[in-house]
Every structure is written in C-alpha cells, then in structure tokens.
Length: 199
Ligand SMILES: Nc1nc2c(c(=O)[nH]1)N=C([C@H](O)[C@H](O)COP(=O)(O)OP(=O)(O)OP(=O)(O)O)CN2
Image 1 (tube, rainbow, N blue to C red):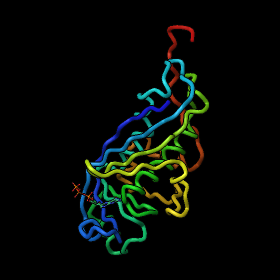
Image 2: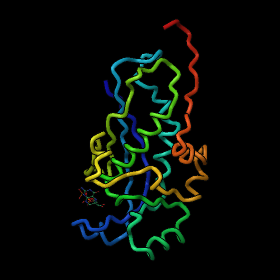
Image 3: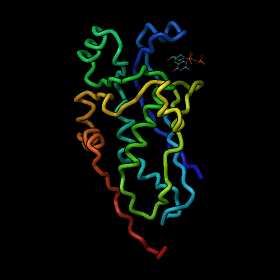
Image 4: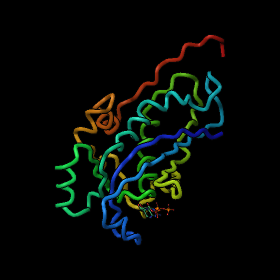
C-alpha cells in the first residue's frame, strides 16, 4: 500500500544549460509542491502505513528548508554564488542543478536517510520505506524520482554532505543540528503512541 503526503514551498533558482531560455538565464521562482510517497505491506498499531502526523517532523523540516530560499548549483558562477549568499539570508547550495528532476532526487536521498535513521515506535512494519518523491515545479510540470533514480550516478551524485544550508536556514529548524545529526548517523526517535486498545 502507498500513502502520500503533500508539502509546499516557495523558492528561487536558475537552471543552467536548459533549453528554455527564460529558465536558464533569469532568476525566477516557483510555488513547489512535493509529494512524498511511503510504501508498506503491513500496518502499525493505528492501522496506518505511517502516521501522517509523524511526517510533520524531520521530513517537513527538510523540505521547508527550501521555503523562501534561493537554490543554486554549486558549480554555478562564483560571483553569482557570492551574490546569492550576500543578498539572501536563506540559500542552499546543491551538488546538482535545481531542476524539478533533481529536486525530486535530492528530496528522495534526504528523506530516505531520515527514515532509515528514525526509530519507529508504534508497531510500524519493518518494510516501511520511501517509494518515490514527486516535485511539482508548476501546475503543469513535475518530476517523480524512484529509488533507482535517486542513487543513479549517471544523473549526478547526490551526497548529503554536499547539500549546504545557510546559517539562517539551519537556525530556523526545530533542531538546528538536524542535518549534522543526519550526517553523523545519529538516530531520530518518533514519539511513543498511547495505546487504548490492545493491538
Ligand atoms: N523537464 C524539465 N523541464 C523544465 C524545467 C524542469 O525543471 N524540468 N524547468 C523549467 C523552468 O524552471 C520553468 O520555469 C518551468 O517551465 P514551464 O513548465 O515551461 O513553465 P510555464 O509556467 O511556462 O508552463 P505552462 O505550462 O506554460 O504554464 C523549464 N523546463
């Protein structure tokens, strides 16, 4: 079974080298919608694949980091990068270009790591896992990344350590050390559920 949770953020970028001239040479913004799809073949004590409420913790924070941020490819022009950092408190440096395809892959890699390092406490199936991520750039265009896309080096390597969040982005997280903890392999604990009926 699949469940799907929708997130939203507003972000600015340039996508270098693309065929659409407006997109490749002018800073522009989008109201992104991101769908996170989880998969499992058994249900937890609440008879859910994974409580939607739990998806409003670290997963939401990781996506919300991009809200009102300018995102740039770390191989972009050094002067452009310097100015992004100078004039925007919220910026994110990416190891890949910020196309819809790469956002979908990037979110997959981050959320997959978060889930693998999360202790689930309500009888969730051990096979709960990230199925795919859909990044809607506009109302009419989206990309969907599956596991084989996220870790496909031919599409560009995405290492967690290569995603750099500005100080302001990190300061606004509930846990400013969230990414540092993720990189260090630390565990994240879900809150324990109170059972009213014996499962
Ligand atoms: N495969 C992709 N194609 C394009 C991407 C992308 O990420 N992946 N991105 C862009 C631009 O960012 C652009 O702003 C969005 O392009 P487009 O869909 O053409 O936007 P419109 O709002 O003009 O779309 P309408 O369908 O005309 O409303 C370009 N391509």
